[in-house]
Image (tube, each protein chain N blue to C red):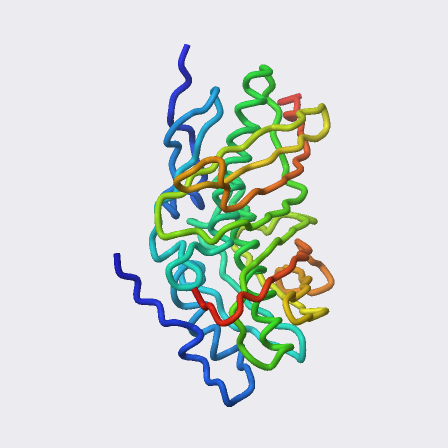
Length: 157
Length: 139
């Protein structure tokens, strides 16, 4: 089996600051991120916001059109992961150790979903993250997330 | 009386080619083949795709438990915590849910995902669901 996703570690420039918009062109356009078609929305010092559009094939319940919660998990996984590299100012190989989502309300049919990931603390080994998902109004979140990522040295895979 | 092997999986699960591949003590085992659309970092499953598989297994388990009780209640997910233990290799992945407790108002469910060896899970999800009585119809 050949899957032609570029190696993140080898493609990200090492001598410039981490650029979430550029990196999302890899993470959001190949593999699972590409399946969900994640788009870069914006970033700050310690946060990254991505978004996915509602699609009929991402639905959990065909009767209501409510988006599958797993699509929100994937969105928050990528957004929180990228918030670590943004805060750090560079890419580091890491894997998700755990991720929790609290679903405050469903994401309705047709609505675009935004996921903002925030890195609130970094150690040598662990990135502590939180975040929330919304449909365009950050004061009306649909889910809250929290989790940790662990650095895996120089191993990208 | 044997239960049908296939149950109605939601569009999200079908889009990722998940299917009920087996039953263990009546509880559905959901399988998800490896493909580019479930890949995260090169050569590994995306954590979100693993989470999706775990959620589908959890939901299938709780629907099965409700049916076994003769209940026609629905469910609403409150939260989920996923622990990732091992990287998901590029191969078939399986998951099964276990209803730890099924109460009148809520259920605690745990789902495990594995590849070659069921005793070596690649991820475990812990979920809470609200149990919703079906609306009394009509008048």
